[in-house]
Length: 408
Image 1 (cartoon, rainbow, N blue to C red):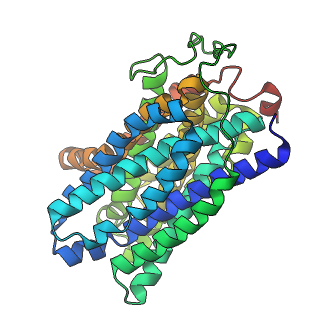
Image 2 (image 1 turned 90 degrees about the vertical axis):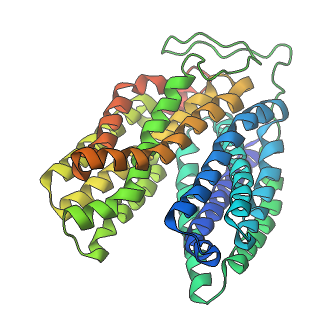
């Protein structure tokens, strides 16, 4: 029996890991221009490198799920964080595009592994505590991204290169992670141990899964959960890559005002995730996801149809608020279907979701050439409506969160 103090420390520990995960990615993103300039890369060449990171992350997520199910999330998460921090440094010293691509494939693979292990650990802590916590973990990840970007900006302003930036941040992450590892939730009952129950069928009618059964990509419910995250990350990618372009080029907004679109999206994303656990406990994940999907769809569509910079900024803010709580609820549902195969389920869902972040901006750009950017940006709104209509996919079984915790 794990006591309340240990559970409190476990929640703090996984929260810090999400923070560090965001710091690493935010720092890398902030110094991409410096890496590009050092190697003299063009935009197309840089895109190849960035795709290498994405490919590595998607590839790394798949075996990560099996590793987590076999050895436990703690056993995978801690070393993955240490290696992820260390692999932040080599891209700064790559001597060619080919070497950079190799470095980023490895970096991405470990980053994807860490993503899966952290989400499984968060679901395990949530199950042990008996109330939702995954949304706040994702909020802290976003805060970490801001901190990492800010750190990168400070190093750049001081005239220090990407190598110094990455080494400094990596050293700090290693120190914190090594201390934080002592607080991580102890390993739970090994999967498949005699007497361990299977997950009972949820209210959605999905059959219980035998303990220890591998989760295939097309397992009942897993593919749909992955599609929901895919839809969300198409919207995130679209906001990141196209919101500023839309406000500046299509609506004629000033350069400084044009950047407010993505700022509004990001701020509302964090704000939504900070209150997401409380909303999930009060209203349940199905109603929360349905409401968030409708908010994202109607808010963005209205902002685009009004054809005004301020309306556009509000629309992207609504998109961020709407998408904020969906992915955490989906990850929680995937990890709670069967604790014995939570790693594989989350790996499949995360892989499909990450693919959406890569594909989304390309899809918007291609469609914009055919029908114009304002109409192309309606794609995330349509996908958000699909998420709202499919919200019952996140309905928990009896082991997800105890009923007492969902009544507020």
